[in-house]
Amino acid sequence: MTVRAVSFLALLLLAPLTHAHSVGESYLFLSVDDRVLEIEIQIRLEELGRVLTHAGLAEGEVDSDEVDASIEWLSAYLARGVSISTAAETYTFSYREHDYLDTAAGRFAQFVLTAQAAQPVPEVVQIDYGLVFEADPNHKALMLVRFSDKTNLTNFTEEVALHFDAQNHAGRMDLTEALHLEVLGYFIGKGAEHILEGIDHVLFLVALLLLAVVRRQDRSWTPVASFKPSFINIVKVVTLFTLAHTVTLSLAVLGFIELPSRLIEIIIAASVAFVAVNALYPMVSERIWFLVFGFGLFHGLGFASNLSFLGLAKGSLLYPLAGFNIGVELGQLAIICAVFPIAYWLSRKRYYVPGVLKPAATIVGAIALLWLTERTFDVSGLMPG
Image (cartoon, rainbow, N blue to C red; front, side):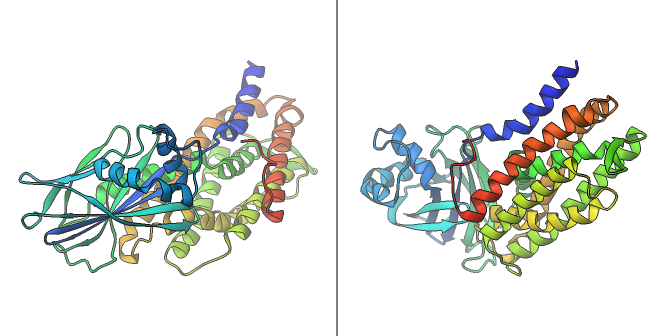
């Protein structure tokens, strides 16, 4: 039983390293003006490489030159893959132009498609999306309304409307209103997904949890007295972490704070390394909440890259921001509920500090130091995957 528990903790620490690629996500921006419909489709070059490889037109990753060379095939593929219809008409889209966009989330190709309606576009339309899924079943897409003459939206004001995945290829959209509950639910899932797949954030939390079941005594660690107070305390600490990153995430997405992404990633790596070193050489115990709050401010700036590149208008951010932060907190609570009971049970054993806490902290610290080296000196390849 002991070996299984220790193995579980080791797997929990190392499992995120097996994810070589993040889940692909594309973005569609819809504009409707009386009888003219325009869709701007933004797809990562990584995803286009998978599509072209699946079609036998490329091998693996592609660059902008390879996309340019395949534009005739891609324009037909895009026009087939996105459909908008009403009870009276199905709109036929044609390719107009394309360009490229560099963001914190990677490089995207931007394709503009247009369609002409025979009669004024009604308030409710059916949208079908079928791009990329054949090459990547984990692909997702988010549709936003950039302009609609059915509302009081002004041009370049973007409202999140629908999302698509392998199980959800279609949706009905009312051009007169934003689907706030759907948006909130989508970004709750996105926030939970981000915290569970973000290796550095997960290791930061796991290191905190391994320390939460012991207390400092004579520059070493001894088991906490009981389960409930310790569990409540770690929930409070992690919630404080959430509040801290909520502040900076919101300020960054709204454009009030902007720091170099490389500096942010360096500080995040340093925060993971500090928590790991603190487990090996006790420096901070009772006042750990103060440091967690400070590190949370920088983790929030790291989270901001997930929303800032969408280009959402400030008036459209309430539901995405609220949903994303709720999702992050739910993801953190899921990690607490999974790890804390096991760590608490193991902490009752004499071998917990030398056999679990210190080896786990050493692994986390080593990973964090590799990140710190990569991000400080702008090198790659030190980490597996």
